[in-house]
Every structure is written in C-alpha cells, then in structure tokens.
Length: 303
Ligand SMILES: Cc1cc2nc3c(=O)[nH]c(=O)nc-3n(C[C@H](O)[C@H](O)[C@H](O)COP(=O)(O)OP(=O)(O)OC[C@H]3O[C@@H](n4cnc5c(N)ncnc54)[C@H](O)[C@@H]3O)c2cc1C
Image (cartoon, rainbow, N blue to C red; front, side, top):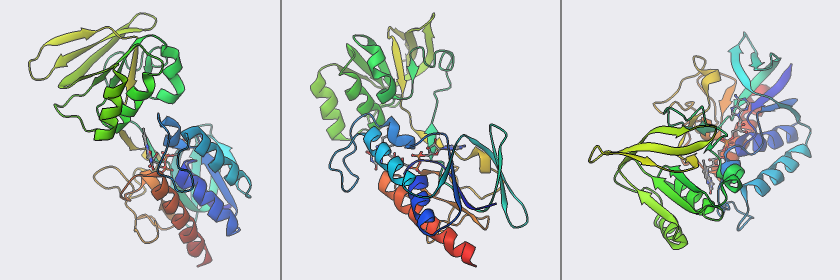
C-alpha cells in the first residue's frame, strides 16, 4: 500500500513527486512519459523562471533528473481505471498491474484533439503527425499542411519552415487566433501560406500521405491540396477518461477542484495542472499546483 500515487509525469506530476518525497510519503509515480505537453513544444520555452530560453526536451530532462534525485518509485505505464475502496484507492494499468494507495493525484494533463476525418488514423506516422519536434526532419524539402490557426499551429509552421519547402496553415474559421508576434514570425519566413475558412475533409495517400481535401466554408468549393505531411494542431482535451464516474467534472471535462488544496469531489483524490479546473494552463501553473496538491495530500494523510 502506497501513501500517495501520482498519475502523470508532466510539470504537475513531477513537482508533486519532489514535494511528496520531501514529506517522506511512500510515493509511486505512474506515467506514460516524462515532460508531457512540454515535449510537443515546437519553439523554445521563454516563460519558465530561471531559464530565459530553453527547449522543451531540455526542460523535461532537467525536471526528470530532479525527480530521480528523490525517493519516488517510478512506473512507466498507462493508468486505465481508478476505484475508490472503503479507505484506499485501487489503480489499474493497461498492462494489468494493480496498485493500492491511501491518496491519489491525477496530473494526467491533456491530450491532442484529433480531426476525426478519414485518413487521419490510417496515415498516423505515415505523414500525419501531432508532434512537430518529433517529426519535422522527416519532411525535408516537402510541402506540408498544419491544421489549426492558433499559437500551436503557427509555432509548428515556423519550426517546419526550417526543413520543408512550403507550409500551408489551414484555419477553419475566418480569423487567425495566433498572437501577432507568431503571425509576424511566420510571415518573415516567406514560406507560410495561410488558408482561412477551410474545413479539412479527408487526408489522402497510398503508402504515405500525398494530399488532403478541404472545402472553403464561405463558398462551398472543394479543393485538393497536394502535401506530403499533415500536422494537426487544433488544441487539447483533458486526459481524464480513467476517473470518469468517480469525480465531478466541469463543462470542459476537467476535474473540478477546490482551488485552495486541489481536492476533488472524491476525498483523498487530488487533481493538478491541465487535468484540473485550474485557470491559466501553463507550465509554471501546473508545477505550482503539483506542489500544492502534494502538500495537501500530506495534510490529508496526517489526519
Ligand atoms: C503546443 C503547446 C505549446 C505550449 N507552450 C507553452 C509555453 O510556452 N509555456 C507554458 O508555460 N506552457 C505552454 N504550454 C502549456 C503547458 O505545456 C501545459 O500547461 C503543461 O504541460 C501542463 O502540465 P501537466 O503536468 O498538467 O500536464 P501534461 O504536460 O499534459 O503532462 C501529463 C502527463 O501525464 C501522462 N499521462 C496522461 N494520461 C496518463 C495515463 N492514463 N496514465 C499514465 N500517465 C498518463 C502523460 O504521459 C504526461 O506525462 C503549451 C502547450 C502546448 C500543447
């Protein structure tokens, strides 16, 4: 029986792990990976204090190394279900392992939204990607499309221009939501074309992507765009399916928490970072919430 099981190895979960170990809680951290969304960051992070500019991969490494200096057991796998027993939690993983704990922190963050169009699943890893940092070099001298005209889409496009011939940004509304700064950077590359009012319908190819179909929402015109890569950057959704039914969620499907202590509607189950209802989804906020949740779990266990 653990005192505290943390689910997630992003900024919230890692910080919670460090704090829990310092409170001498017998802690297990279960995660699919380290860093979480930081790994998807296409350009350097410039708003985490202590690092004027740092890549997502480097910040992840620093977080991971810091955690591993502490006495926290780590299990690299995916949690599938959490059940509340009389005075403990039962945590099941995809691999069939079962762990028991007196308190739990859900710090599972967010996962990519998918387009839900034909060809998206089929060509995943064969031209379709959700991670620019991971896959951009595969598209050297090719034409690619980025779906999503927010900051994530623009940052992906700017990074992709280092390798690719041309990048099309497809935005389904008639307005670009990315910051002016990102819009200026994209324009400066001279290799980004923005197509608004465009709804992607299908990703096509044979062994690998060779085009996509979209229709112009204002005219209804259907267009085939020859591209060899499609990067999807249309936002995220909370990764909380494994606690559905156990805790109260808000209208965005985030775990509702008491902002003073990260406690969910289920006593002993805490949530922090992007999986929770906390405002301002940022690395520093997730880290701060992770610290708060671990200390709150410690006080809960003291009682
Ligand atoms: C493209 C992009 C750019 C961004 N840029 C910035 C920026 O410049 N500055 C900034 O401050 N913030 C930025 N953010 C936001 C920031 O990355 C997030 O707010 C932060 O990572 C949230 O941390 P977290 O620990 O709550 O969750 P996440 O980072 O999402 O980490 C969740 C962790 O949980 C694990 N996990 C999920 N489900 C399970 C499961 N079932 N079982 C086990 N493990 C699981 C994941 O593998 C991951 O390790 C950006 C986000 C995106 C998408």
